[in-house]
Image (tube, rainbow, N blue to C red):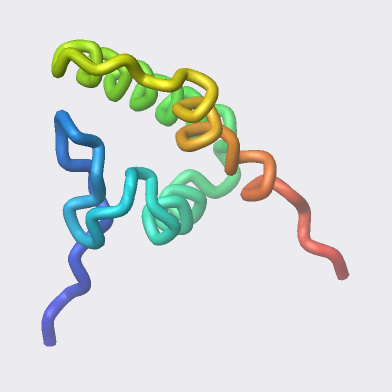
Length: 87
């Protein structure tokens, strides 16, 4: 049985190695939320550091990143991931 390939970033483009969507893609978000369950601050720090690395990589490629879009991409989904479940 083969293991599913993880949805990890491919640098310096910051596209998913598995599905080629901008990272963190939907499956990566789900995996990160699962991995960091109960540690939302650590997840926010990890994603903020990843966003900074992605921004640096884009500048290194001679691109001008859209910073509000980068924030939405890397950190904007966190509030949805932290919502408590309704009973």
